[in-house]
Every structure is written in C-alpha cells, then in structure tokens.
Length: 150
Image 1 (tube, rainbow, N blue to C red):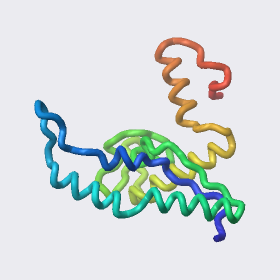
Image 2 (image 1 turned 135 degrees about the horizontal axis):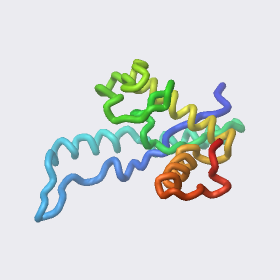
Image 3 (image 1 turned 30 degrees about the vertical axis):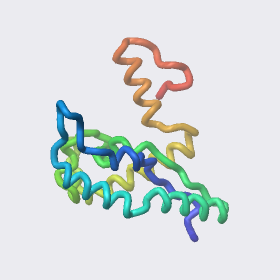
C-alpha cells in the first residue's frame, strides 16, 4: 500500500519449470528431482502473484517495473563485478573483486532495485545498453549513437 514503485525480475516461469526428460539418444538426469522442483515452482503461483501485484499497483497509481533477471545474483552491488563464483552458496555472496560480502538474496535484491531505478532514469534497460557497447567494442566498431555510454 505504501510503495509507489515495485521492481521485480521478469522471470520466465515456463522455462524454469521445463522438462528434464531429454531425448531417447540423450536421456535427462535427475528427472525425479527436477519434477519436484517444477512442482514447487508451479505451486508457488508466481505468475498469479505478479498479476495481482500489477493490478494493485495500477489501482493505487503505482508502477510495477520488470527487469532482466540475468546475472542479478552474480553481480556485486558495490563494484558491479560479475562472476558466477561470487555466489559461494545459496545464501552467501562474496565478491571476488572487492571482497564485499552480503546475503546472496539481499545482494540480488539491491541489483534488481538498481536496475529498476536505471530503467526509470534512462527509459531502457542499462544491461542491454552495456552489452551492445561491449559487443561493438569487441568487434572494433562504434556503438549506435543511442547506445553510447559516457
């Protein structure tokens, strides 16, 4: 009721709950475990929750912002260093660059909020802009004018 802006990851729930069966040539592994994870994901009703959240925000005149979920749990919210080894466990985050430590979910939440603020300020997803600039740099080309980063 008291939050004008909510920022959430745009999760692809269908992809998260995909099959682990594989093919006849290459059968999947841990099929029973994957089925249990899928059941848990679908039982939570994340899609319905997000719809309800959006409805309530609209009703109250607030904003619901969706951000790209890629690397939010692997990025240091202090120095922005991205590395899969930053997330040392399900609950612990330790940056391999600046040694910042935090609860992994708290660190990810800070990254999600920062991405939402960037979308409000810039009108587009900053990660997409940076990846286009990095791609242009790797190809030794100038990035498009609307994607230059100072």
